[in-house]
Length: 328
Ligand code: ASP
Image 1 (tube, rainbow, N blue to C red):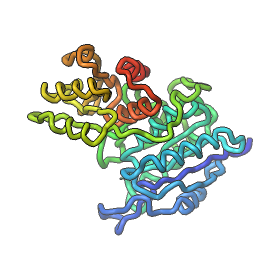
Image 2: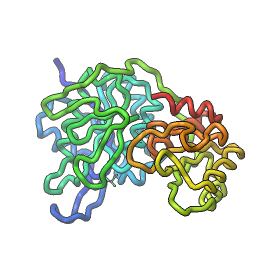
Image 3: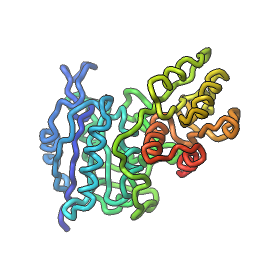
Image 4: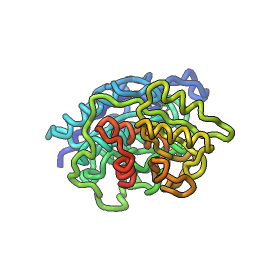
């Protein structure tokens, strides 16, 4: 059997980070060139042929349309290329869930697409980057990884893009899955899938847009007034995601201002600032009366991505938006 050929798209992040000292806390993301990283990975003797392509060398806090558009284009081409078996995207961890989910919504569920990052820079004591990268090579090179949508590999765990989120700021074990747990456990020498592929041959859920609209996340806080909502409308937001208290709640004056936004044609999605849990319709907030959408299992960051994709695809009716959020 020949080794799998894996396209590696580099974007930067801590996995390519370099520190002034291997024990200090300050470092810069995206400093290590992709070729250098791949040299180290090849030296591990993994059974895969790695094909590098640098897309960016940035911290993922700076990622946006330019890089997303390039990633989507490169992956679409690679999915049709018989010389490529799987795709890895090296990525910062801060926004990995956003890039992964955006690609997941807009790519066919074909060959494995795996985002991988690290919590510690490449030259830090106890760096996790090479381990995570070796794990990603194992996943991207496994024919059984196809038909599962975009995945994120971190800390010996494989997550589906729709479920994954960063849940800790600095620990190596920083990622969690909700509402589903991990898809698989992985090490450089083993890979155990917990279920068969669930999206085999599915086409893209949404068309790749020509641009993404301005959609803001507004975090609710005790004692806040309606001014932040008015400010967001004032800068031309096309949609608002409220990171609400508890089950997506907010002070009455804020809910009233958000209802006025809906009346003005700006969709509003209620998610939660709480780390984990569902936001369902009509629990304490009367979504039917106010015209809001409940984010269900999606946290604020992913709710914003889905709302941007929907608006870009011409979906602005609250009922149609709710149907998209209801789809697991
Ligand atoms: N700020 C970094 C980034 O997201 C953090 C990391 O990669 O862990 O690029």
